[in-house]
Length: 96
Image (tube, rainbow, N blue to C red; front, side):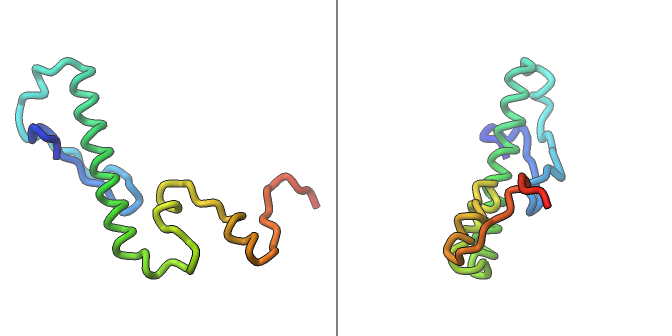
């Protein structure tokens, strides 16, 4: 929920927006940029909160050496993990 309780957002475990709720009529008097900022801020906070909950809930099930937060944020590098096994990770540039 926004600090001024204007708007709240719910996201699913994938971080996809599933609900956006306005709790007052204040948004009608807001400048477009101000409203846009309020909405994007509350959605980003909801995504961060959900990502934290997912990591806390499922982090212990991740294989050793796998950072669930990196996977959720898109920073996970599978080739780094596979390098410990001396297995090349396919890049998609090799042709049969």
